[in-house]
Amino acid sequence: MTSELIYLTTSVGSNQCCQVFSYQCDFKRFCDLPFAKLESTGACTPGTYGLDCSYTCHCTTNCNGVTGCSGRCQRGWSGPKCNKENIALDKGTSQSSYWKTRVKSSRAVDGSLQTRFGDHSCIHTAIGRPFTWWQVDLGSELYIHKLAIHLRTDSKSRRKGVTVYSSVAENQTNTGHLCGSTTSTSPDVTWMTCDDTARYITLYRNDSSNRDTAMTFCEVQVFVCVAGTFGDDCSQFCHCRDGPCNYVTGECSGGCKPNWTGQTCSVCVAGSFGDDCSQLCHCRDGPCNYVTGECSGGCNPNWTGQTCSECDSEHYGPLCEKPCSDRHCDESRGKSSCNKTSGRCDNGCTAGWNEPDCTKGCDSKHYGVNCESLCEDRHCNGEQLCHHELGYCNGGCLTGWTGLTCVEAVTGPEDNRDSITIIAVSVVAAILFVLLIASVLWHFRSRNSQRKNVARPFISCTSRDRTEAEANGLDSGSDYVNAGQTNEYEQLDVLNSPQNDYDKITGV
Image (cartoon, rainbow, N blue to C red):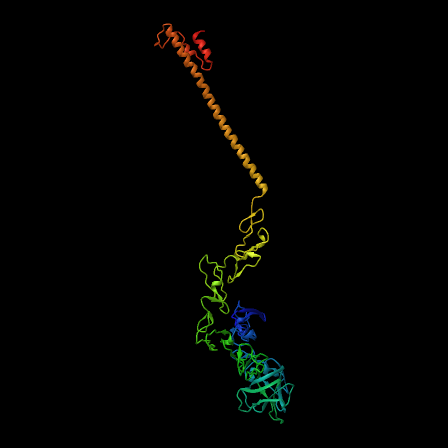
């Protein structure tokens, strides 16, 4: 036996739902529940309700998508759920004679329940005419369960002797299916049971005399239940597989729709409960209470709550079959909660995974955060798989591209030549600068060397003069010359050659 869950999509009207097959298809009923429609809204479209959203709301306010009407009914509708229709309202009428031509036969189907003749809502045939009658054409053949006659309250003398017939053909006599008759003591609102398929309802007074044979009353109502309901007030639901149920007993002759059981197909099957069996219970031992949903023996795995209809803290999904731990949530800003219905991550998904529950990786053409990066934008070397998280090229990049995903362009050959040229020029400029500095230093040192060479002959020449002077008897300690006498040392020109200076001193 397998516990694998298989999900199939089916269409119910304009809605989508999931059919769940588990344990060798023993359990197939999820799709037939009203709440399995349009998961985004959780209910039927406005104006409809119930199983398969097949019922129409006939109330002005307060129509629940599952249980139906609880507010005021629309004109012509009545009952706790507004499922009982007066099909005689505003239909075609005729009568045998008129008390006055302005008193129309249509007054008896105008929807007004005023029962005084002065309120202009009651009919009246001519006085002294035998075999008077009044008739309404319902427009089509319908199963008629009950009808009501609202008699005048301001005059009761003409109440007795009126018989009511139903028929499939026009009938202006006392033939057809007898629904009932009135007496002098009949109540103001007299109910009659027809339980017949008919198109025409005829009220007939079988009086052949010329006495007071006039017939007068204020309203005739003919009621039918909406298909799928039954009972006196049409408040009970039957879920027959083929056609409507019996309007009186609710019996389904062709069997029940899925999830329903019983003679009237109005009892939930085991495992469901609540209004329209719209909720599932997942009890561990035996079915739940089909009204309250309570599980007396505990819950199946992954389920919790009194009715075992909620996912536990570690699972989510329509059947609580998806582990929260299988998601790939972005938890860079904190741990994500686990929505019990959708499993949506609070801060989105990590790179390579899709919302809403971050369990589906990017397709083969996308990668990265929110799967927004295109695999075709990469420049991989050869055919390579596109990793859904990072999109990296594990076989390297094409020439001219770099990076993990090969989407970053590298410098081209033309740019390389330009760079080499710039580097070469820079190197030459640096060498020339160094040579210039070296030349300046060399020139400076050469000038210093020349100055030193000029100073050395001057010293040598002075020592020679001193020697010769001493030999000629001059005082070596005398450092002056006679007044008026020119000092030869003052006439030395350091810019001239040493030989010329020496000739000036010695006179040679």
